[in-house]
Amino acid sequence: AWFRTKTDHGSSCCESYCPAPSAAMGEKMDASEEAAARQMAQQMQSQQDQQAQAEEKKQQMEQLQEQRRVMLRQILEPAAAERLASIGLVKPEKKQLVENFILQQAQRESFARKIDENVLKQILEKVGEAEEEKKGKIQFQRKRHDDSDDDYGIEDL
Image (cartoon, rainbow, N blue to C red; front, side, top):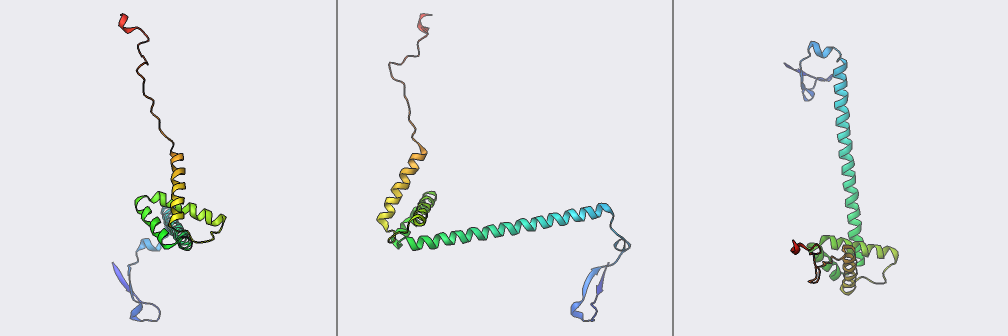
């Protein structure tokens, strides 16, 4: 059963509907109910904390990405930035490597001028060579005709 309550000042704007008081509401909760309520409150608090931390981390990542974009706009000429963006459509990991390389170089030494397409091509070649070295090369060794597995004299049997 529900009943209508009013606040002290008697205005109808503050009316609300509440569950009717019962004998159980007047009594205190027993220990198991209190423990369950505390556990539920702790779970809700931890979920809220996790959501807040995730939101904060997301905002930090967005700020870092924006800083990267601003720095790259300052370093790259428009044509070079466009070329790098088109590379990112095909190979996003290569774009990331090139951006990291450019930003590292910018931190170590300031560029005398903006990076144009020719310089970007050279950087792409350097990154490509470094990438190939990391991958390594696979070499196949094929048997030669003079290699013989017949060392046991199977035809003598």
